[in-house]
Amino acid sequence: MQNKTQKGPREGVAQFVLIALVGCLIYALNNGVRVNYGLISAAIERATGFDAAAVSFAVALAQLFYGVSQPVFGALALKKTNASVLALGAGMLCAGFLLTPLCTRVWMLDLLFGLVIGGGTGAMAFGLVMSAVTPILGEKKAAAVSGVINGAGGIGGSILAPVAQSLIDRGGLRALMRGFSILSAVIAALCVWLHTAEKKAGKEPGQAEAPEEAVTGRAILNALKSRDFLHLALAFFTCGFFMAIIETQLYAQIVGLGFSGQTAAFAFTVYGIFGMIGPILAGFLCVKVRCKWVLGTLYSLRPAAVILFLLMRKTVAAVYFFVVLLGLIGNATVPPTTNLLSKLYGAKKLGLLSGTAFVFHQIGSFLSTYLGGILVSSTGSYALIWLAGGALAAAAALLSFTVREPQSEKVE
Image (cartoon, rainbow, N blue to C red; front, side, top):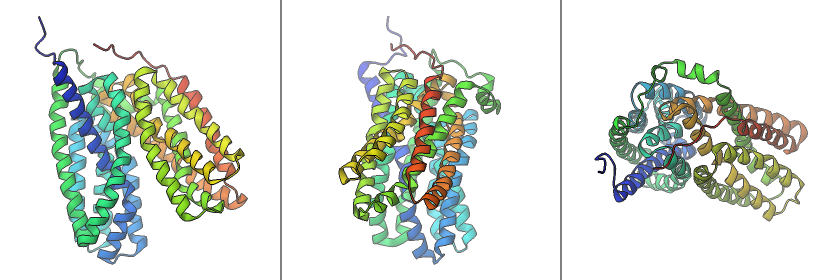
């Protein structure tokens, strides 16, 4: 006799698609807002009359709070549910967007854009999205959909850019903020529905109750004592170091090679497209292959790509070949990293621990940006910073290969 709690094939597929779609929409909004900070800040300058330095500081605060707030919201998710924190983040974005046009003082902009909007994006980070969907879908299906959700972040940035520009052209900052607030409110409503689905999944047979550690602040300390978590976090540090080279140095390097700014801009468009494909492929590979092999291989390809590019004659084809490789192996490390954290420590603690690992990532980004400027200024060449990034990526590969990955759950 069939258990009443079992779902039919069609219902299971429908739920999988719906949960994946909601996850994609949440992360698309998050990433879409962050990658369009430049466009938003220009609109703020024109509407408020604040100088560029003041607006840039508010944006820098938003970037900072995106990183440092993630462990905080991850800890809150342990007390509540992941989806409820996602709803809180979307609500913060909605409030921040509505109130930003009303700013008459710089400190108000710092508070609303830097803390409220920046913190809102931190509450909707990738780890928290995956923490919400994994208990509902199960480990295997969540591994497959993780790459799609990560790739949706890039799609969100691409779609929101022309939408934002159109809103600015129609009604300036107020129209832009109003449009973004409506979108955030819709996402908040979806997060409330996801909260219900997450709670229901936690009550189904076979779902173990979270141990006491999962609802205390000891989760981070215990993870930091774990060799496997430290390996993943240190590898993520090198990831931040490597990605910052792409974000802060590559455009100038391409122009410095004698190519036009248009060629460099198009190269970044190509990079963005393949940056969506890479995580999707990595997510599906994690279903077929152990996640640590996927992650270690991705890190191993980074020094190989660097050495190949440094040795190649610098033609347009060589530049595009390099950015395609970077796109495929860049953000693709995120799905296997989050899947490993979920396997090792459970989906409930994924938001907290992925946020903690992301702090390592941002420290790597900071050091890379600072060191890159020094090396390029002193040597006039980008070779040393690329070699440093490649060497760290090779170390990250070794760290990833030695993670003690538990066996995946059995597919029913």
